[in-house]
Image 1: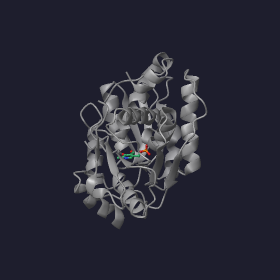
Image 2: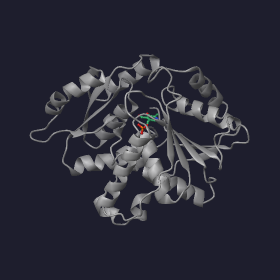
Image 3: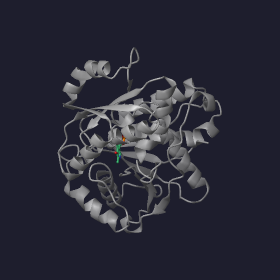
Image 4: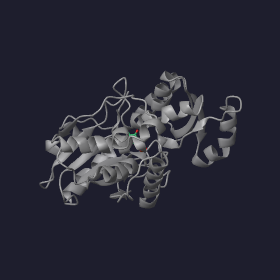
Length: 327
Ligand SMILES: Cc1ncc(COP(=O)(O)O)c(C=O)c1O
C-alpha cells in the first residue's frame, strides 16, 4: 500500500494508485563526493519502474495513469524536448495500460543522446508532433486536442514532465518513503535534498512531502531549463495545488511549512547544453559508481559539489536524488 494511503486512509477510495515500480529505492553514502566535512548520500531512483527503468517519471505515472483510466480517456497529450525522458516513459508505461500517447516536441540541441532518445520515441508507438518552439506548440494545441480526441472525449492533457498537481504526488509519496528510511535508521535525516528541476513536480512534491512527513529537510531544486517558470513562486504554487488536491480527496492536515529553494545558477547556456561543471560532475560521480545523465542529474550534481565546497549545506547530510532511469 502506498505511504499516502496509510497516512490518510480517506485517500484509498478517492486517489487511485497503480504500482509500477518497487520501493523503497536504495539509499547509500557517496564517500568520494563529500567535501569540507559535508556528508553526501544518494537516493537512487534509477531502477524505479516495472522493467527497472524510468526513475522519477514513473513515480508520477503511478498516480496519473489510473486517473486517465478513471476519466475514460484513451490518449494522453503531453509535451517535452526532442529527447524527452518524460515522453518516452509516458508512451511505454501508458501503452502497457492500453493508453496511447501523443507528444508535442520542441527543439533542443541534438547530440547523440538526443538522437538515440528520438529513435526510442519513434519505436514507442507514440504520435510525434514536431512543434519546434513553445509558442508554436501553444498555437497548435487546439489542433492537437482535436486530432487526438476519441469521439467526444478529448485527450488527457498533461504539462511537460507530468508536473500537474496529481503527478507531483509521486514525490510526496517518495518523501514519505525517505522519512520511513530515516525512521528505520537506514539513512540519517538529510539537512538538504538536491534534485534536478525540469518541470517542477519532483521538487514541489518533495517539499510538500517532507513537510507532511515531518522532516526538516530543505529541498534544493537545480533548474535545468529556461523554457518554464520554475522559481520559488512557481514551485510553491504547484506544491500548494497538490496540497489542495489531497485535501479535496479527504486528507486533513495543517498548512504545510514548505522548505525549499530554487537555483538557476547551473543551467548554463540552455536546456541540454553541457557546462564545464556538469561534465566534471559526471566524472566525479563515476568514482562513487554513480552514472549521471548530461541534461538533468549532471547539472544537479554540479550544484551539489559547488555548494558543498562553499559550505552552503549546514544542518546535516545532503541527499542527492538520482532521478534518471535510462532505458
Ligand atoms: C532524469 C530526469 N531528472 C529530472 C527531471 C525533472 O523532474 P521535474 O520535471 O519533476 O522537475 C526529469 C524530467 O523529465 C528527468 O528526466
